[in-house]
Length: 152
Image (tube, rainbow, N blue to C red; front, side):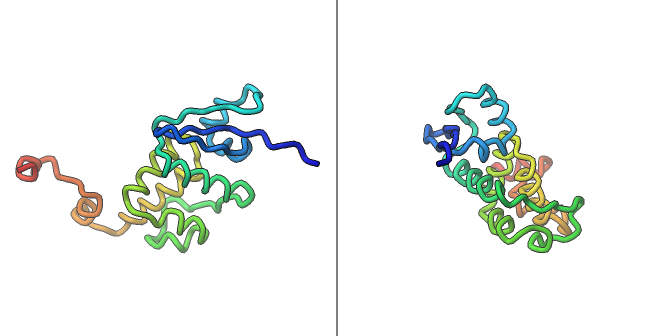
């Protein structure tokens, strides 16, 4: 019988705990570096990652543990992300903009290169071929020179 998998307990900003096999959690270079001391179970607080986003990150890492993500060409040649990533990855980042940006920030904080590249590619696909004004509208960016009239 196979020995029980060594696990890491990831703790979200709300204090929710996620017990994850160490080999899956080590997709995060941050978690990997924090758990290299060899204990059977480690608790890793992640104060910058909400429970909802951490659950999604664990889903991504679990899926790609046995299915390495495809390389995403850079620069992105098309605004249709479905042409350059797997169906799983396309559906994974086909979420509300706030969730996407939180995933991008989590990927950066947790140092998960493939997830950072995927979320960045999704953002790039959202702006590719658009005018600056369309990009401002898409991301609700207020022009600094007009801030005084936008704040009223």
